[in-house]
Length: 100
Length: 114
Length: 80
Image (cartoon, rainbow over all chains, first blue to last red; front, side, top):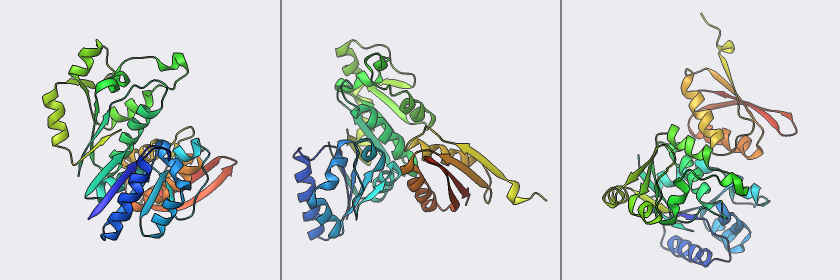
């Protein structure tokens, strides 16, 4: 199954841990996982767990506008994309969960 | 094509959150999916003719114009409006009873509470 | 016969950010014929990376990206 996750809250929120744990578990079960970070969710790009998820085959995209507004620099392995990428995720997944 | 419902639920003051929900809704139309925005609970304040620029908050005019141009359905939950005594809505936002809100949610492939 | 090179439309998107940059480019492309070119001006750096990538994904061809100033780019698109 293809799972999409939208995260709009910053890392101090427990949503971050939930997203990390769900993504890990889903990958272990062989599901494809795509995460889109926007609004304050873009602050999560610097969490090492997200880099690990990306290394483990989770596709992670960030709203580049929100990142620019918050002065967040680019991170290897994470796409600094656009709302178009979110639309592609929404269209391509079997389930989309939002955390915000 | 998917049906996507975005639910705007929170107060729009002291935050860009609701405006960002609308910008995201514009973005979600880019792969030809059908997007409906539901204003509910305190989120209905986002659908009013308020003047946030008076307190230095950027209005969501551009987002509303784009959503209308892209023919997105914009619904404001009637009980939420009545509880708050709200009458003046942004053009193209339609008052909807709970039955229509429920029909929209159950008819959606994706529901995003923002 | 009309010369294809002359069939170029311009769109100025200075001041626009995502997703309006893509929405407006997409709507403009709907107005022109397949094979015709559209030149879009952007002043928002993320848009210069993301709009061409998204347009390629939609099947259009990016003929060139030209930097015209500190925060000014022109992107030439050929409609699929």
